[in-house]
Image (cartoon, rainbow, N blue to C red; front, side, top):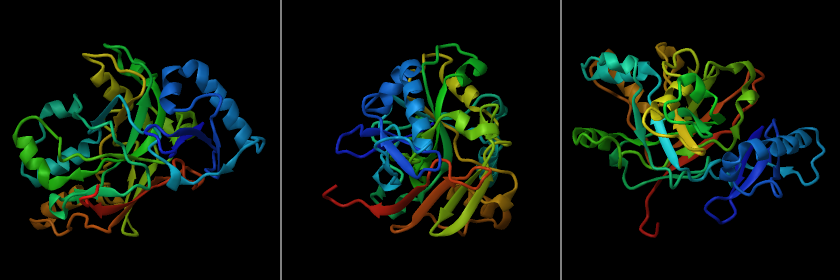
Length: 330
């Protein structure tokens, strides 16, 4: 099934069920008001939402209305945890190679991960508001999952069973703030503003054969200022699958329902497939020509992130955002 959260003036929005073709929606009134309620009581509430989803797809839902992604908050507007991995080792290799540094051997067996802000996510069509272009504004096209409860010490296989929903993410990065923060030895903070998520979160069964081994075997499309810049395959080169990423978190603590876990920038060794973040393009330019030539994003720039199924239809709807300046009133 496919779920979204509509804006209603509150911080957690209103849960809606969305048809498979993303054409119609129906409020989940009478079942659950918010997505977190469903995650907390999944075995009881998810089947009821599935029944409504089936009625919606059959054209029999009584109060269906046209689905509008512009009215969406993030599917889970605020979460107990947002942990983003770096599961595509090619991305790490490129960044290191551009700096003339080796990739530590541990990076191939133990995933990198940072903990981002989860109190204030962006909707799929909300502006990315940044104080200054000088901060080095970059998009990052990623896949993310929402978990149920996963116990401490769970194996990757057990952790994978905890995946409840899949969605897309734009993990915005302020690249020019990163070196100073990493030099402090405490990792990302100001360099990682609010993350945006796709209009729709879907259960893994909606992906069919594309959901294999905890990976999504489809291309992730990135379009910057109307120009397609990335068509990266999300499946084959994902070094750590989502079960491994979740198990990494669960090594020393329980993972609770409503945690969001990200894949990191989707990246391929074949440069012809483009890039899912500008930093990677700049690394390629540095490797090839000695210095980068592509600048970061400017105010007014747009970024669209989308994934299509084998039938060519959009699965999650599109993240479609504009970069905007921070004004004093905000």
